[in-house]
Image 1 (cartoon, rainbow, N blue to C red):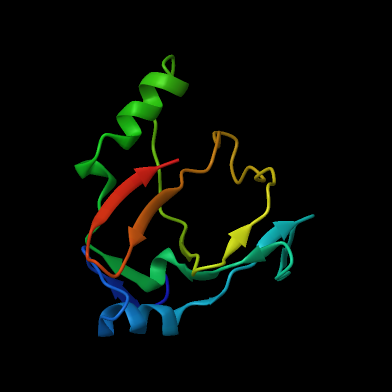
Image 2: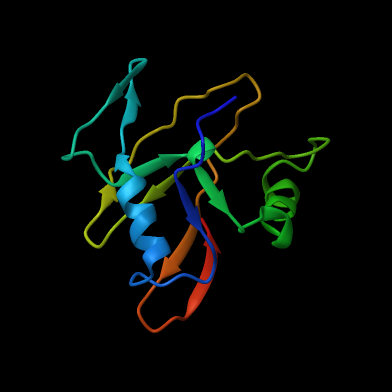
Length: 130
């Protein structure tokens, strides 16, 4: 089994909330893969990360049409399209990840799903898939 959850994220969230601040405190600098190694390079990626096993959240892809849209538009001949949460990446203002090509993690991997949850001070939220 994985690690015990270290942080929670309930939506909607605000940056001032104790829950969101605890989430940020639980995160670590986000590494990326290069040649089979986990690399920390703030010139290439400036973000925080929390492994899925350490996160509790009420966000569910099943409540949105994201996977159905991907299946219909990108993989119509596939029997099904599945996604699993690997980690939460947090990009604070000024954060970035330079253009790159993901390394497949399994033979049936075809891409990385990024779900952006925009959190702002006026409590308006929207979910956007890239």
